[in-house]
Image (cartoon, rainbow, N blue to C red; front, top):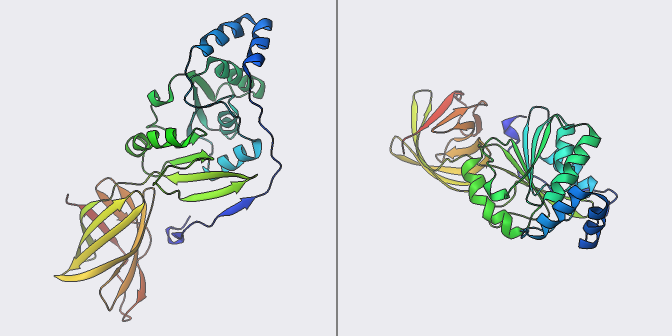
Length: 296
């Protein structure tokens, strides 16, 4: 993907047949328990657990859309919080990802394990009974969620702190409060959101373009970036800034020259990854190589 495609995502609708999810009632669990002694133990344990999120299955077309939006592929590490019957985790495993599904309900874990075995992906997916707030997520390339708005917002600080810049978060139905999504789609009448965990770029930077030094000050609110700059004591305008995970694009203008920069953020360093674009100004050659280092 070219870094020059830094434009706002367009909403898209995907039309598909909805697979209606059915809630498992207490009566249903008791019926299973009569047929399966292990299930009876699970029912007893489950009845003593206070669930943060009710179990509602995600329709299969939505699962497929979540995989596409999260760009799940072979070799990815995927963590599904509130994994239920395992359908999201299993879909990721079928694409070659290594997957962890987490649910606090032992009955859902038992069901998910059975489904994984039936689908032949037990070597690529693990289901674990634990509180989702206790699950380490730092190594996840993709985090999938179908929880509740309040739970998403409680998870938000952990996502922003622990997950690597550029990793993806895909949520069925619920957003992240004031952290706007990078993409939103309607799939089979359901809303699905995508975020790229933003790099931390706030601070004072020294940008070198050839022999030219630009002092750049950036502020940040999630993926929203603002800035001011100076070159040789002359104020410059920082405009049209866009942060997508660890990728950044912005325009520098001094009233005569307008140049577009594309870079990748790596902690306290930004490395140019595309030639600088001369958007307007005199026709002298543009120094294409650039980099920036954070001072504070």
